[in-house]
Length: 119
Picture (tube, rainbow, N blue to C red):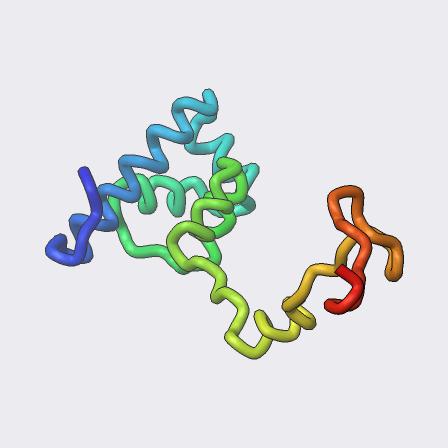
């Protein structure tokens, strides 16, 4: 099920519980094993998987124990750099390109310069 704003809080909690239960089973962990790894009670794991309300710190511990803590980055992405910070990172923008030939030395296709009356 895709989570969206139209779902009730209870429905979202139940879906999160189902997903965490699948992750636990895929990791070959019992609820008691997960509870030990997460330093929470077995009842807390049962409550999470049943879609019950738990403290946020308990959910974080369970996510960490299942190696799913990085999924919170998707949920709450870090704010990117502000406009001033981006400008400071850029430094000066190059506006010209210098030529690779030395000054005063004509290029291979250049003809020597002469005065107009010497032609």
